[in-house]
Image 1 (tube, rainbow, N blue to C red):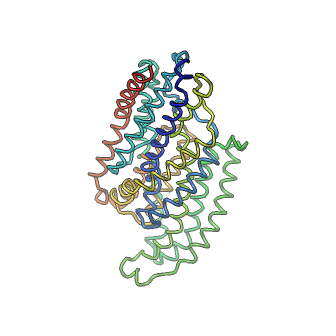
Image 2: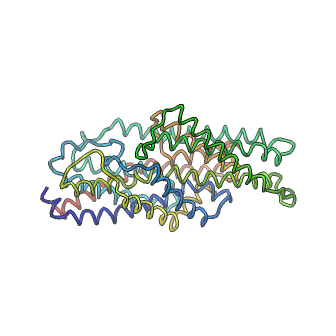
Image 3: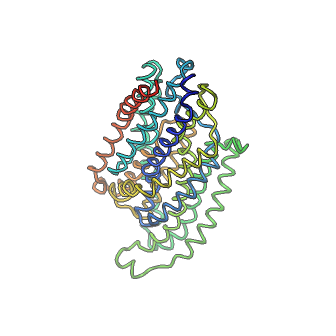
Length: 421
C-alpha cells in the first residue's frame, strides 16, 4: 500500500503513456484490419478510411463501449492471492501494456495482422506467471484462445464464401448484371444494417439503460436494416452504367454499384470495432487508475472515465493515420485481389461472425475472422487466387503473438519491480 501512495502519480503517468502507445498499436493493426477490405477494393481512400474511423470508432466506444471494463482481460488470471500487494498488479498491468504495444508496433511495421486481444492476453499471462505463479492463470481460457486460431478464420471464411457465391449467382452470372445489382443491392445493404445493429444490441447497451430481449433485438435490428436499405437504394440508383469501363472489365459498372455498400460496411465495421475493442485495449490502464484511486483496492472491474475513452480513441486514430497503411495493404491487396463485391462479402462475413460469437460464447478474434473472410472470398475463385506465402507468414505471426507478449511482459514486470520495489 505504501508503494501505491508514494508512486501513485508516477504509475498513472506511466499508464497514460503506455496506454496511448498501446491504443496507437490497436489503430495501426486492429483498425487497419477492419478498414483494409474497403481500402484494398478501391471503394474508399486511405484518407477517407481515417475520417470514417475517427468518427465511427469514437461513436462505437462512447455509445456501445460501456462505462465499465474488466480489469483482468477475459478473466484470464485470478488476482485474489495478491490483494495485499496491489503494487504487483500495477507493475503487471503496466508491463502488459508496454509489452503489447511493442509487439503491435513490430507486427504493424511488418504488415502482419495480429490479434490485439491475444497480444494483451499473452502479456497478462506472462506477468502472472512471473509475478503471481502458474496457478493464477486460467489455462482453460488459454485453450479457448488457441482453438480460436482455427475457429475464427474457418467461420469467417465459410460465411464469406457463401455470400460471394450468392452475389455470383444473383448478380454476376446473370444476363444483365448491372440491373440485378440495382435490384439486389438494397437487400445486401439491409444485411449490413441488420447485422451491425445485432452486434451492438447483443453486446449490450446496459449503461444507456437499453437491455432488450433477443426477439426485440431482432425487431429493432430489422427496422434499422430497412432504414439503411432505403438510403442505400437511393445511393445505388445514382450509379450510372459506364460502358467504356465495361468494355475493359465486364463487371466494372456492377462494382461501382457496390461501392456505396462498401462505404456502409466500412462505417459499420469501425463502429462495431469501437464498441468491442477500444475498451478492451485500455482495460489495463483503467485497472491502474482504479487501484491508485482507491488507495490499493484490487477489483475484477473498474470504472471507465470519459478521459480514458477519449485517450483510447485518440491513440487509435493516430495509429491508423501513421502506420495503418501496412496492415491495410496486407488485408486489402496481398492475400487476394479484392473488388467492391468481394470486399463487401468479406466485411459482412466478419461482422456476422462477431454476432454469432457474441451469442454463443465462441472464442474468436476479430483479426483472425477478417483474414479468414478475405481468404473465403479468394477461395470462391479457387486456391490459385490466394497468396499462400503471405497467409503462411500471417499464421506464424498469430502463433508467436501469445509467447512474445508473455516473455516481454515478464521482462518489463521484473524491471518495474526492480525500479519501484
